[in-house]
Image 1 (cartoon, helix red, strand yellow):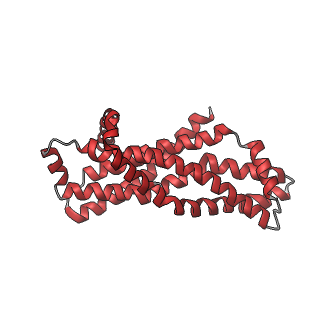
Image 2: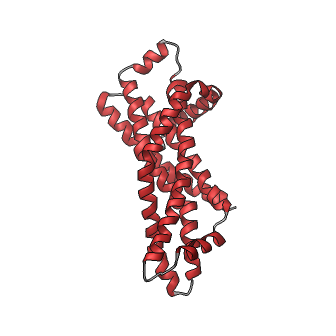
Amino acid sequence: MFQNVGEMVILLWRSLLAMPRCWRQREKIFDQFFEIGNASLLMVCILSFFIGGVIALQTGPVLVERGLANAVGGVVGISICKELAPVMMSILIAGRIGSAMAAEIGSMRVYQEIDALRTMNISPIHYLVVPRLVAIAVALPLLVIFAILVGWLGGAFVCSANSRIDISFAAFFTTLRDIVQIKDVVNGVFKSFVFAWVIGVVSCHQGLITIGGPRGIGRSVTKAVVNSIVLIVILDYILTRILLR
């Protein structure tokens, strides 16, 4: 475990040193950005809409029964923007994009394509890792912003359609605006930015250390997804403690 952590820290440091030259790989960055962002947009929309609906369905009736109907929009809004949207979207991207990164780089490692890059004096970190890190670091926060808006819309739709809650769209967003502040949204987006780096570094690292043929590729993909999710949950707690201060 400590060896893997040390290797990931070294990989992150070398990637940061190569960032000033990332504009040379702008075509690869745009390709990765399209794969992460546009191709994941429909899943993000569906997931965030129903997350907002479930939160409204669970908390709305309880708050209304206790005379706190004017707090439903705020509770749904702040829970989505500060926690659910960044964490759930990061887990989704870890499963969909992190696994793809680990599989692609792992296949190149197994079939000696990375060794061929080194033979041609091409850095695998600069050629393979940096474009993926830049793309996911830009795409995931944008997806989280979109997920927050769609989640709010889902919560408002459920509140207006459910007879036990019976809160109109205007009343929902009025209370949401009174409780949710800009810094709450910024905190959620900042979390997603950190999670994006975690997913990228973990997935690329697992791909680079892949050995053992197709079975090794499968193990690397599994480790990339599981380790990313575990680190996301742990860092979510740490970042929440820091940001609450």
